[in-house]
Length: 135
Image 1 (cartoon, rainbow, N blue to C red):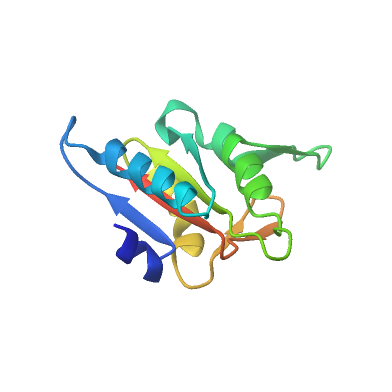
Image 2 (image 1 turned 90 degrees about the vertical axis):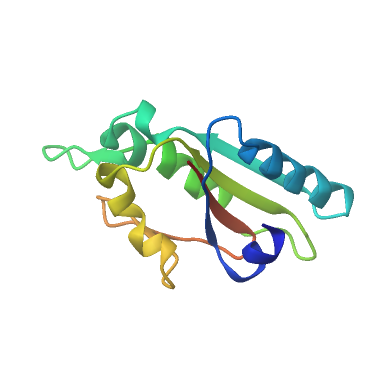
């Protein structure tokens, strides 16, 4: 998994329930931290909320933007790090992949690495952050 993640910014881990997917992810994070590369996961289940609650919503009347769970996490995690920092951050989508929410992730998972929100804001996935999908 570590070697795959060296060349990919989005990785999907697939296996049966109880097959050790979470154990592998936790081992990666703990080992990375012990080796001097502090790591942290931000876990969410995208199927537990609606697409609006996940990404956010733009009020058509007032033009006010309200962040969703993912847009809030994505923005916070992708702030530039201090120079010399070796920190790693993983956004972990723990749950079934559904066409309703994964469609908006296409531009993040391809080489563009940009999340585009309904208000027109574009947030770049920085080098210290990666996406993990656990199915």
